Length: 625
Image 1: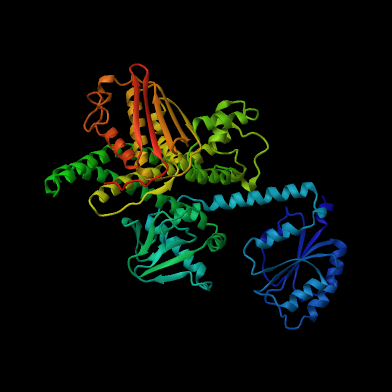
Image 2: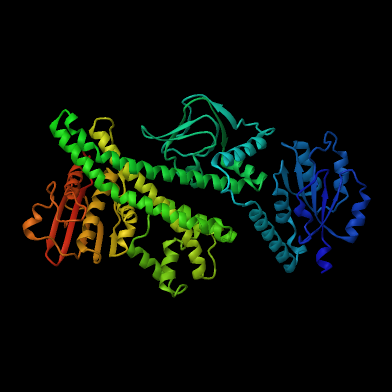
């Protein structure tokens, strides 16, 4: 044990450095002296504890004349590793002196908290450290980090939103009080753009005073007042901004990029849990507002029938009535999915925030959550195929499927890109599955919100208030999103997807999702609680390039005498007591026709029903009217 403590870390500094340098579990024996001390002391020290690394802190030192520094460095062996700390922009003369007269490993200007300890750990000679010392040191570092995080992650639930945001913003102002050379604490005038929809967002905006309006296109979706965060989701996930944020009046903000925000969090251990709580509250408030808005929208749509007599054109009035009924019909699934997602997230979040998740699992879990936010779920066939590849490591088929469904076979999700050598235990998979569910349901909520926004925009387009252009989109993504939205209903059925490799289609993707939703919902209703659904997509190049999508079920089928009426307006085969306005397939046909495609039906009683849709790749979809 005594031999393990003989190697010395010599610190020459006039400043108080990281206390971790003197940790008893460290693989070195730290001795600190001032720069002006007697050089003879170093000779005596080296006899007692051989010096293995020199930390030379030159911040604030007199460097106009460097003769004293030259003499100091001559005291030590030429091969002794040296780490130097300096004020900003060390002079060329200083650099030359350090390089020529010492074994300089690294020079660091204005080190942040913790950087010095990390550098010493990095450049400490491995030959001077035994395995037992290294193990004790790693255990001590890990224990200190976990203890520090737990000690500050106290419960903020007793604080009001205004109190919490005021406390956090006050901490930010304290941080920048004498350290705002880049003017990150700013004041903007009216109509200044903070975030722009569809564009990359590299900043986090804290509203200290004033108000910011968030717009999706021309639609105002929210107003963010004092204490709010703007750009939080896109900043955290790296996705493009979902809305455009514009100041409503003179607004005081704190603008942080990622490096600066990291420095802020490092400056105070309380800030990370405080920010996490603020961000979760913000997401929760927006989710609640979204649900309330959609409920109000349903109530508004149900009353629009009384306004038909005020429309000028009778044909337009009839179409508007049809669209109103279609919107009310289509809102059922996304609103139910939003509600279900809210409930599930509320159930899953306590398991992620109670501090019981190990740090390494939490980092992996956040990678899984972010991946689930941006990636559609795997098809059944793809999930089975990839699960089989891991059958040797996970004999339990359920564990193998969960491992693959969380994309843990993707090395990039693992911290440092290094997967665990041993298979994860079921309990570990259970913990990580919490993160996947939260990410998956957040993505579903986003998909549902876009669906609802698309329905509202269709009404606005018909009224001549807006215009819409088709975009390049991937049909398979729309089908996968629809299946995710209807996941709860699909649990009672067996379904299989064979989604082929498709080119992008010039189309209205949200309108096509309405088609997939209608056909799948009709198939599930027809099978009445049990049955099989097969979904297939493929690219056909001859005689003309088209995308073919097939939905086939093994339900009771449709009698021949009513198959000709299946696409008629107000015709329904649903029994009394089931919700059915008789317009779902009529709307589907209109959307497919709008894209220049065809939809056909094949059905035999007791044999099931098959819908086949062809969408041509060439051509320009008509604007919705």
